[in-house]
Each structure stands twice: as C-alpha cells, then as structure tokens.
Length: 432
Ligand SMILES: Cc1cc2nc3c(=O)[nH]c(=O)nc-3n(C[C@H](O)[C@H](O)[C@H](O)COP(=O)(O)OP(=O)(O)OC[C@H]3O[C@@H](n4cnc5c(N)ncnc54)[C@H](O)[C@@H]3O)c2cc1C
Image 1 (cartoon, rainbow, N blue to C red):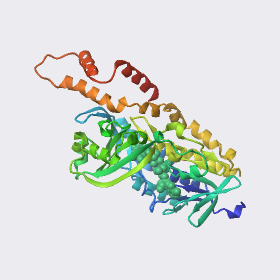
Image 2: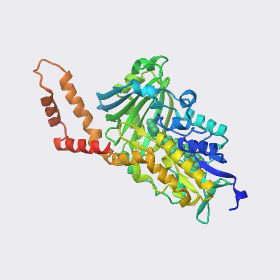
Image 3: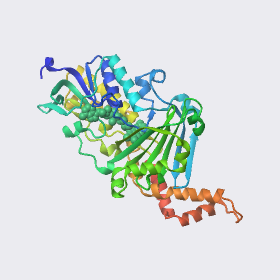
C-alpha cells in the first residue's frame, strides 16, 4: 500500500488496559493512533476481580495515585481455605504495602474510561461502539481492520482484544485455547451499607483487603474465589476452570450462590446491595497459551497474548497487560521509524517482552497452571486444616493432645496421605 492510503500509523483493537496503554504510549511518541472498542464506552464490557499491581502503571502515569479512579490501596492480604462451616486464613497485613502503593483495587468501568480519556488527551482517536470484524491482509501483511462496511488502513495493528482474541485466530497466530487453559470468571459488585466496610474488614481509610478463597467456595471445581474491598463496595467472585466445571456438571451461577451463602461471606456482605454482575473468560494456561505474538504488520498484547499468572496467592493480568503494552509501544514505534513493520522488524517486541518482568514472571511461574490442576488443593486441604484447628480450639473435658498427635489423627481421618502431602509441598514450592 502507498503511504497516503494509511488512515493511521497504528490501529489498536481493544480499549482494555493493554490496548489503552499501548495507544497512549504510541501517541506520546508522536504517532497517529486509532483505539477501537466494541463497548459503548471503553471498559463497559470489561471485568476483572480488581486488584491491580501498580508497578508498571505508575511508570506510564506517574500521577496515577493522584488522578486515577482507583478504589483502595491494599494493605491486607488473606489466603483462606474454606469448608462448608469453617474458614482457615493466612492473614497478612503490612503498612509497607500501603505506603509503597503495591496494589490497588479498581473497577474497570471507571479505570478503562479514565485510560481512554488519557488517550484522547494524548491525541489518540478513540472509537467506542465499533466492533472489528476482521483483519485486512495484503500480500501476507496485515494492513488494517474491517468493521462492518468500514475499512481502516494502517501500518501496524495491535491486537488487544482480550482472552478470546478473534484477531489472533484470524491471523492464524494461536489455535483456539483448550478448555483446561481457560477459566470462567464470575464477578459481582456488592455495595455495603454506609460506613460498614472499614469496620467489617478492620481497615483504616484508604486501606484495602484482598481475600483469595480456596476449597468449598468452588465445591471442588479447580479454581478459587475472591473478595476485594472497593471504596464502599466489595468485588466478589469465582474463577472456575472450564474443563473441570463441565466435567463436574456444575453451574457457575449455583456455585456463586453457594459462595455468597458461606458464613464468612455472609458476615462481610450482610445487607449488601448487588450493583453489578457479570461473567468473563480468564486465560489460565500460562506460557503454554501464548502462541505467536508478532506477525507482519501485527503485534499482540495483554490477554490476547495469554499473559496472566494465577498462583493462588495472586491473580495477575492487568499488570502484565501494561508490561506488554510498554514493550509493544517501544518496538512498534521503532519499527515504523525504521520503515520495517515486517515480523522481523517487529521482533524486538517479543525479545523485550521476554526480558521484561512479564516474560521473567511467566517463566518463573510456568509450572503454576499444572500445580493448580491438582484436585486435592480444592477438596482436601481445607478440611484437614480445619480439623487440626478444631481439635486445638474445641476444648471439652477430654484430655488434650500435643500438636503432632492432633495433626496425625486429623491426617488419618483425611483422604490425604503423608506421601501426597510431601509431594504437593515439594511441587508447590517449585511451582509457586
Ligand atoms: C473474574 C476475573 C477476575 C480477575 N481478577 C484479576 C485481578 O484481580 N487482577 C488482575 O490483574 N487481573 C485479573 N483478571 C484478569 C484481567 O482482567 C485481564 O488480564 C485484563 O483485563 C487483560 O486486559 P486486556 O486489555 O488484555 O483485555 P481486556 O480487559 O479483556 O480488554 C479487551 C478489550 O477488547 C475489546 N474487544 C474485544 N473484541 C473486540 C472486537 N472484535 N472489536 C473491538 N473491540 C473488541 C473488549 O471490549 C475489551 O474492551 C481477572 C479476570 C476476570 C475475568
């Protein structure tokens, strides 16, 4: 195509975190950029549990803490093993987390709208309410996108269209993900009665809590739950491994109701008002899911590139989306300046991504998806922990036993064997 046939230097498809940050950075480098999203307003269709690890976002927006519509700074993290009647928590609170602004809770409708505003200020043409139907390909090179009757020509397309990336499949970059590489995310936002949130969670103003839930909350389906505090509401939900959900014949809506009925959740959410509810797929396959992320005239960022890490302690996707956006914007701008947007010209994106914290963390936690597939984690560990603690705290008139004997008798009553405990412990420390 000739120079004057290009409408923009770059077209970014998807105004989620990955797409908006890529578009913003490219516009800052003086390129003409279109940012297209199918949602009526950017972010309107997006869903996230809501904990954003901020280290990369604050490098892009140094004024993030003053300007961005975040909810609370997380200073307390809990990992909670649940049985139908109990919950055993590893409860970690630390002022350093709050001071350093490690993580904040966000609501995507607000965050994505703010990111789109920042893009517009930087000169990006933001086009909401437009669904991209396919790529325009000319002699093996991506030269634009099709949206209904319209065509948009550009030097480079950035596929930031999320976990289901239709653009990647259109370009033959990634096969359809296997069902064990996907999870179904179910999330609600529950508004608490005025003034209740801080006292219920034991939080100071602007401090937030993030609870990761394992066990009874998914009724044995691989995955977990979460409960995060916003300003005056909570984000609560489940992430359910798709293959296991189907195999066990359970429905996400029933599991979600079951979660809300648990005594722990009932206490936190009592008299709350449901203000938002939705479902969304989550990429869970780790590095194995990535596929090709560079093609002639095309790069892939964020969830579209399979960039998520779930270790049970943390669920990460948004910060990896930002990291990929930073690497992609740098490489795309350099390729355009060098007038080489072939796969070879754009290849520095892949190298930069692999060398960044995104690539390093994806490698470090490459074994996590396999470890998290183990059934025992969801069935057996919660009851074992609860039984040990029950025998410690439930005093009656019978003689007490020391911890070792208590643990041994709880283990005997559990389907878990000592060899399995040892194997899971060993694999856990190597995977997580
Ligand atoms: C229930 C749940 C809980 C999660 N919890 C967390 C968490 O606590 N912390 C965390 O960091 N991550 C979490 N994640 C993962 C996180 O949400 C994603 O990793 C992150 O949203 C990826 O950003 P993205 O920009 O790549 O994709 P998305 O946010 O999915 O954005 C993709 C965008 O592309 C647009 N789009 C798609 N197709 C088209 C098309 N054809 N034309 C035009 N536009 C299109 C969509 O409208 C959307 O705006 C969670 C996910 C879920 C579902």
